[in-house]
Image (cartoon, rainbow, N blue to C red; front, side):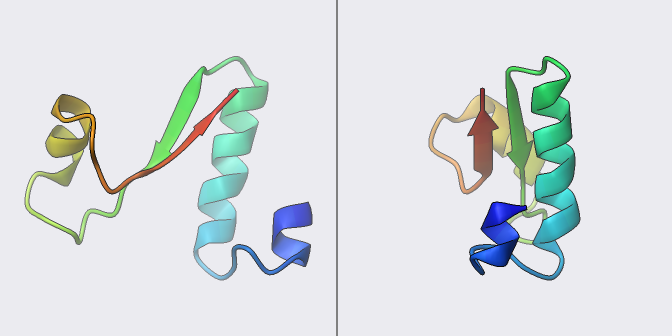
Length: 59
């Protein structure tokens, strides 16, 4: 992946980003990576509030 070669992502983010790209290629409109360590109920927080701390990829 170009973003890996350019050093923009690394280590544990590579599989997460790879699966997001795969999902988008298969028709998903948006894919998000959420850091569950940030706060309690982080998934619910990301769904309900527009301003979150997630990484969102779109087509």
